[in-house]
Image (cartoon, rainbow, N blue to C red; front, side):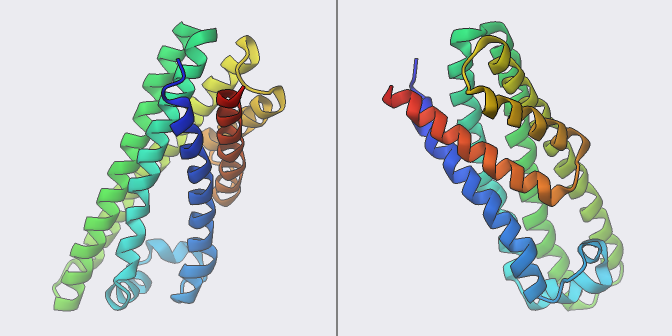
Length: 213
């Protein structure tokens, strides 16, 4: 029963890299585009001219597609591993885990299409663009936060299961519990992303090492 674990291990390593790329986008790309304050992301007066001038901003939203795809593979791999130790809990965690990539994918689609439409309307000088931008931002943020919380519950569940029944190294499981709590309460988003990068990379190593053994 290790059909998903190998591909899930590589997916987890790539997911760890994607989290680093997300940090690079916020700390390197956005400041290069003139966004030095995170609060400006919700300000149509600041964002609309940038979106109109730099279409690459819409492409950034597409990072959610590989992110969601990799996360789904990871969920299946972890479920496969935990099914051996705790099948009942594994089934519940699988359901929670699958919801997270679905929400992430929805966020990516809204972000990508929303930015394209709003930037086009802004260039045409049509009225109501500011309100449209704010509406899209609110919906996108709502799904984004929901995805973070659901992912946190999943991370918390699988690591609690690993601590109780085995499956992960104890230090990794305890780290995962902290990461899960950070997700649920959204404690310093950038710190959550960094913690995610560490835990998912660690997970990838554990899954691949388990295959070799």
